[in-house]
Length: 70
Image 1 (cartoon, helix red, strand yellow):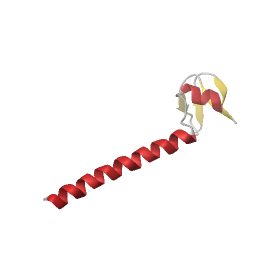
Image 2 (cartoon, rainbow, N blue to C red):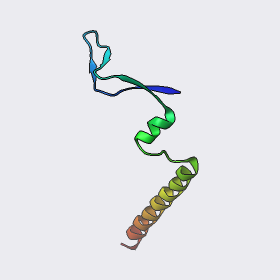
Image 3 (spheres, helix red, strand yellow):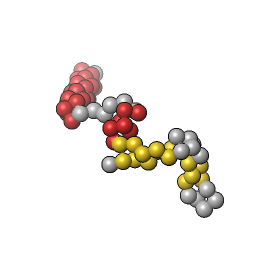
């Protein structure tokens, strides 16, 4: 899949249509990803989800224990 990008700024024309003040460039998905860093792989997403769930469980357990000991 290719994406259309503008090397200048986007502005709005009189009819509300977008106008590129520079030149238009066609970019692939890989080129778009390289502009903003690499995306996470699905393995990294699963690992991060597990860590976040563990963090929430530890914080929740701490708050419950704190309230029970009061």
